[in-house]
Amino acid sequence: MKLYFKYLQILFKSQMQYRTSFWLLTVGQFFIPFAVFAGLYLLFERFGQIKGWQFFEVALCFAVIHMSFSLSECFARGFDMFSSLVVRGDFDRILVRPRSTFIQVLGSKFEFTKAGRLLQSALVLIWALSNLPIDWTLIKAITLVLMVTSGVFIFTGIYILAATMCFWTVQGLEVANIFTDGGREIAQYPLNIYQKWVTRFFTFVIPFGTVNYLPLLYLLGKNNGDDLLYILTPVLGSIFVLPCLLVWQMGVRHYRSTGS
Image (cartoon, rainbow, N blue to C red; front, side, top):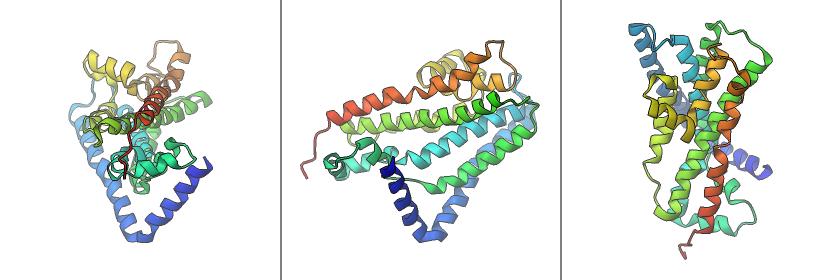
């Protein structure tokens, strides 16, 4: 991890060489999800509730998933941009270095301007929590942190899977955006508002339901007992990244050099 933080420091310094550009991009990232949130606000202003969910309950769901997405975009961007390493033959250089390929790719790219998106999500989170009658305990606070953390692991796992496909396809597949951007858009609402097959897919295959829906029921007191199961669902969702790492290792073993 010392190498990872070294990458972090170097790339942060490089991006701060153009401070005006950096701050303008950060401000832009703040307002991009703002338009989406405005649409959510207007939706509830018109209809009042969706399948029993009130505005601030969905706003909490929105904030958690967007915080997870912004953190994964910032710190796992190397896998999202991995195809460029394969195309240029730069992955060959990574292989000959006596360090983990995972750490090197993870540290190859950071998007610190995503702090703007993160700030906007944090403000929505604070606003939602201040308007919800949640009886806070230490366990509930830990559950909220685990929800965000689990989301980061799930998005990172999807980026890893998409990057692994580049070993066979060279260029990244746009289908991955269905599960990153599309998954983010779906998971910003409680999953039970969708058809059952959508809910099941995004709970048992791509486990976004363990980030926002199931633990959200516990935080809001809407679960029917068995609190421990709802508390542990974010931990179970985080396990999604483990098979993704195994697939990555398999892809590395099957990689064929460009010969350049």
